[in-house]
Figure (tube, each protein chain N blue to C red):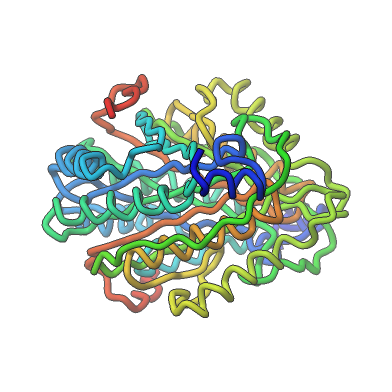
Amino acid sequence: MSPQRDQQMAAGAMPEQLGVGMRLSVHPHCDDFEEVILGALADVIGAGLSDDLLVETDEVSTYVGARTELAEERLAAFASALIAAAFRRCGAGHVVAHILLSRGCPGEASCHLDVAGLPETASVALEPTGIRAAAQWSLYPLLDGGSGQGDHMVHIEAAIAAAQARGVAACANHYATKLTGDLAEVLATVVDAWAQVGAVVPHVVTHLTVSVGSPSPAESRGRPAL
Amino acid sequence: MSPQRDQQMAAGAMPEQLGVGMRLSVHPHCDDFEEVILGALADVIGAGLSDDLLVETDEVSTYVGARTELAEERLAAFASALIAAAFRRCGAGHVVAHILLSRGCPGEASCHLDVAGLPETASVALEPTGIRAAAQWSLYPLLDGGSGQGDHMVHIEAAIAAAQARGVAACANHYATKLTGDLAEVLATVVDAWAQVGAVVPHVVTHLTVSVGSPSPAESRGRPAL
């Protein structure tokens, strides 16, 4: 057993016990989207970024489950590399990815945890990609009545403040916070926020729609004339 | 004031007060994706489906806010028609949409509601599209500690049972429920579940990734060999 694993077990439950993982889908906006997606997946697997992750692709998206130490960093690195590879493979074209990160609901339809404690997680460290991303991000601490974990908006507001301090949070949109910056930094911001709330609230989910290579201007295109 | 509106005000807060609306993004997997998206949007607006909705497009997605009676049905009809139009315009090709539906957080970063009560909402009625959709769906009742609204999984399990009774819920995936069926019926199922939880819990969000025209087989493609 590695020292890292020793440390994590001392601090709380293991990623697999907590159901730490994500669903993601990658959408290249090009005719040869199948080759782009399969090629990008091969790139990421070939680079060893799926090691220690469980990867299952279905008709709608891909599930990536974390089973070992450094769970959050492995998930973030996998997503960053996959989106960057798809972007390169479609000629720096428009690629959108949707990511759902979840923790605390290992049983899919039930989230009654039987674990010793919630782990503190170190911030993830990712190589910059050199690719500008624009994203919309929502964070859901799933509190229950009488749990004493307080107001869900308190956790969300703290996460947005942390993103602003990193220089990644651009502005509030309806139902989401807009994030801009290097693709890797956008992903690291979201994963860190999700893991940090997860040290206090057992079941935490976050959703991110991330866009690279968009032909739309960086500013809002405004309201269409209706 | 219409009789419908009279009835809704008597039953509780108006959609605009509750912040009833959605963000959606549509992803045609084809080289001429811009023409497809703009054309589909023009089709939907031309058909009058954006009447009484506030539509704002930005760099990442489109916000659609409901302001009047029949809010849920208007949102569902808009989304169904937009995805169907994009599917037709890219030659029955592969189109994925991501939809976030939200209610109970009108202030974007604050969700302290000042309303008389939560409305009961009638089920939405949509015309079938004739297009098979496969989707992954997650529902988040955002309860707070001490609110007495119970266990968030109770609401989620009831919503899944309702989807199963409609014949739309295919199976549980990690972090999501798979739905299959006519595009309109999939959307109606999700919107109805979200509105029904919204009659009890003030702040409710649901996310849906919906795919049409996918080249992937309907069965899981299984685990890639890693």
